[in-house]
Length: 531
Image 1 (spheres, rainbow, N blue to C red):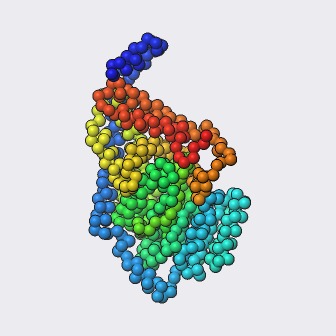
Image 2: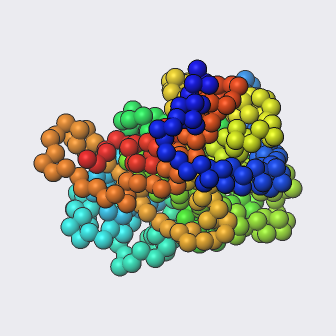
Image 3: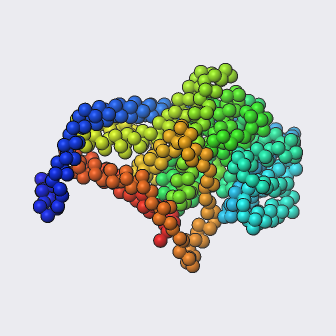
């Protein structure tokens, strides 16, 4: 069968190909393959293997910690006697003043949800200030948000509607300006919710007591719960990745070093710790992580409360998801570049914590993880098919990534049957993330690009059920992604070559991965696909 296909492809006289050109290309390939391509591919393979082993060991380490935490019931927040602290607080009526900030920018679909949820928080009204930080450029929308705030003010909630004439510093700038208001001077803690977050009414009762009982705590972080995880396949795959982040990465950081990256929302900060760390800075697109690292270097501790979840929304369109992933990949790499020297020279934290920050938190999780997925699994391993002199053993090519994948997916058992789709999608996205990480490390163009993630709120079901009077306009440039298409062609070439000349069935994976790159390359992914 294979011989027949070879004859059809290479020997069919009906296919008119210049023999001289083909021979010239083959001759040139043979001349550079052994002296140039083989040693280069060997070097790339060894580097990728080293990175893959680093990622594997990091995943195993975190799995061991999580296993120990769950088996022995040693989650850090269980050490605190939350109920007794709450009883004492209610008995003495000594409630701290709490500020809740809701930063937003043209959040037409979700502003009512977030403001309503925050104003419904269970806490003495005279000890709560709700600060709506609206940077919207749409004047009509500003009026609507203002009216919503006034509605809650009439119900006795202390709502402050704050606007700016510029977007300097984006979200970080808005939060920073909000903390400068005179009425904030009386506040001891600040809670931050992005515009699509909807906390339960007991959120403050399940977070503030931790900070009251331990003056060394700067931050209490809750996990996220996704209201639209079942919208489409893309949101289900996002849920798998984020569940691992919260269930493992955040829990391990909290349990071992009392440090993790602040998620920018659904967290409570001690205002004194924010000021001690230097306040909000807009030097990167991950202002939340920046503040967390600086506070940690000042000696402050963090607590992750894994059994407290706050509802929010995942990006439902691929365009929005790409912008979000660029910011989440580029920002940490750029922050790593800016802060590595400061971390090394810091004298207030232990060597172990420095190692955790530099190696585990930044280097392996924020850089190596992206590079291994793309360069090793999408570039180097397929290239070994075209260069038979380079051999890769099965444990490195199959078993290592399989273990890493299973450890990641185990946190979302309800989606385990989507494992193959998750692998293919994550491999495709690794191209985008690797490029963003390189941009961040080099401080190249788009390093400080900030695009607010589009939210759809309650309009999602309406858009599905209602007949659209107008079909959404699409631009070819917005839908076509050239790099993904080129990678799809590369994968397809490797798959065909392996099918014709290989002695294994690796071409099955390559065909699937090529298809995934092509699907993303033409923008055919996400809830809404422009016609």
